Length: 75
Image (cartoon, rainbow, N blue to C red):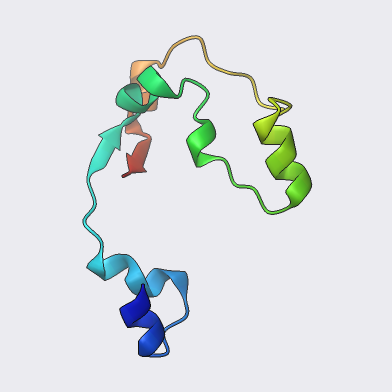
């Protein structure tokens, strides 16, 4: 990140080519994060507090169906 900033590259995507990425299957994420809260998009302090306090609107799945395995996460 510091290298990008020194070059004047301030867009978040500027660092992506330098990152090591491993795709993770949805079932693997669901083992430790069944509600997929790790991937929630929060833009305001209120959204952060709602997520932190468990006040999110979407339901938490009981289990991940095979069709949902197409969801991939980056680590």
